[in-house]
Length: 341
Ligand SMILES: Cc1cc2nc3c(=O)[nH]c(=O)nc-3n(C[C@H](O)[C@H](O)[C@H](O)COP(=O)(O)O)c2cc1C
Image 1: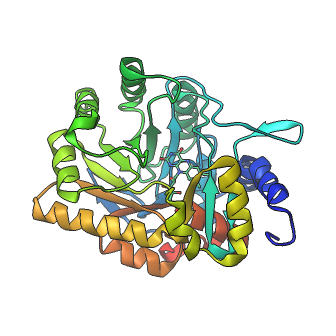
Image 2: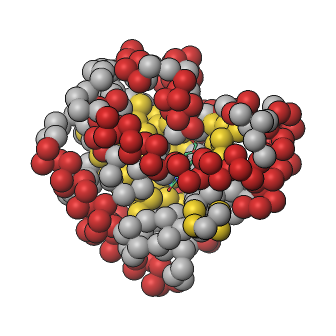
């Protein structure tokens, strides 16, 4: 289809249907389709299995039933912001949408949603509603939080702290989205101070930090440990187009070139798998070396049973988004998680 349609129409088709497609599936599900068990305990939390949806799939907690019924080990809601935000909207026909597109021949995707969020209060309300209906203890819900893109300095930090303060005790864990690829994870960029401020109010809720790149493994592990952080999530989408373009199927180049010129955006899926495995491996080795208690969540390009098996050698938990979307569109949904996968 990517070759039959113009890149513009192809992007529009997916951007306008991203959320509606998942909501439609959720509406059609009235009971669990699988009971995929691979129980793990991380930071004192029991996960029914070790593969959950990555942040961005369920921005506001409106798809918790979808994840729960499909067999996901846990769910991540967000990234949420302290106040509602439309994200990066672009005119497509008569309406405006947050763009994303699959790169189907490369089992990858590009997105530039720009953090649309209904705000932390709405997400927590949706999580509470879900909990009332499904109180199971082995399906943890995490909340991804980030500073508001339209705020700066102290106001932005206050926004993060407001979200953390509101969420502690209401979700099983928190992800702090610190994934800008341009952030150098060193002590002089303010990250350490930010994380220490968060740690002071986290109470018993474990805090994971999600990065776009590991940077210097020794420095990053030392920094997170010194800031009383519980875990590290690697990685977010990648933006090094010159590095990744030649690795994509040439059949996707037309869509890739159109999309990146029009919307920029981060790459996800199989194209970033090698990068994510390399980062998690280096982090895992450094954690052992430093005798650190940091826990790892691996995300980036995971889509097959083999990927999960390999990932388990490095991290106790993993998440997926692009691979899950592809499998959702190509196989029976009751086979998405069994076994896991
Ligand atoms: C459409 C889309 C939206 C995303 N939104 C977020 C987000 O809000 N917060 C976040 O931390 N990561 C977000 N991500 C990144 C994913 O959580 C994940 O780190 C990345 O896609 C790599 O995993 P994958 O290869 O399994 O897709 C998003 C990814 C996609 C494809």
